[in-house]
Length: 344
Image (tube, helix red, strand yellow):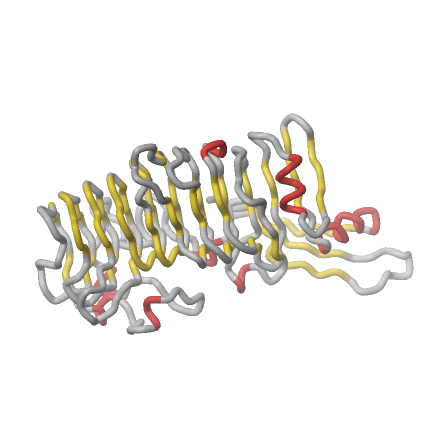
């Protein structure tokens, strides 16, 4: 990782002022660079954008269009409070709705206060959502006749995933509470927070022909999955005392681990079910010794996309800034900004 300290003189003061005003920047291979700073800057920039363009959202609250109908790349400054003290976190107020015209959309580094959803019964494909926090859950709804396919979700925080209308898609290294109606999906190196000790609360509510590999399930009774249709479960950690968790019809079980919740985490019910930035989601030593099938740690810190602490987006990240309140004797203002180039 590279760190670059940049000392600006008064010549560049205007760009710092623009930054302070929460400018949305549109990079377009066709139309060049444009800046938007009105009260609905995200909507204005979206209107000006064409497929293939990139939007950079600074810290602050942004109001999205009714739906996203263009193939765009969108970067925020991140959602982790302690990592965005210089920029503030990037928050999208309300719902983030994606239509089938937006195939290939990429979203990273934002907090969505509402829901993330695809238009109902639309084939929304090749979307990537990475290092985002979704407060209002994720809904991909429909009857499956026109499914959404080839979508990827990496290192997100999502309380509820309901995916009636999605096939052949991947969930890597997310922190999820519970899942509904999964078919032909892969869940690899996720951590599932649902842990209610009462009966009748499944973590996975219907999963047909899915792959669950190298995940951690905090549920501390047998109600892991209901309505399983021949799904495959490989090298998962189950926080249950039995080696036959309720997995429904014809599960395929391969090299899974069964241990108590206290051997896996210090978190306890009910707080464990709600993500908290102050919590430590690393495994305790006994659980950490139980590796996934790829030889890396089970859960979000292993696999192809190990969880990045503080969920910093992959675009260059402003880690600190110090702007002088007054000019010096030469009429210059000193600005010191530390920018970290991200490796991943």
